[in-house]
Image 1: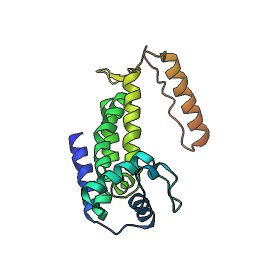
Image 2: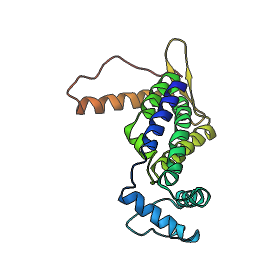
Image 3: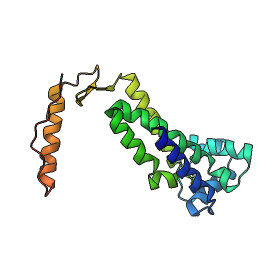
Length: 195
């Protein structure tokens, strides 16, 4: 996990350090933030732009402290993109166990889309971070986690009434849907959840 996060940080820093010129949408968001009062950040943006108000407030705060250079404008996205990875790992581990979480964070760390968004004056990285924080909070609030057994079976543990029959029904439905849309035969090996 740590290696994947370090790799993801490196990818984001390399892309960030390219310091490419702002493209139209980034410049438009930046202009909205520069030329508006704090209160005006909570009204619709000009230039067909949209962004969550709290992202705009964060961006304006950073600009007040560090100036309005291109790297400074992209700093919120970079920090959010880096912070996203360990929280995404924690959420994936709660949802699918250690092995799946390791695969998920390895893919998220090198995702071209997430890497690019970590170096743009757009809210996408902060959106991803806030989303994964909300998912993680919901999982913790509902006490959802994966229990891994030594023989490789994994089951969801929750106090909200998900039964082994519910999981089996879902598996059967997904297999049926895949069989209808796939040219490749879907495995007929039975998979059952343990209660």
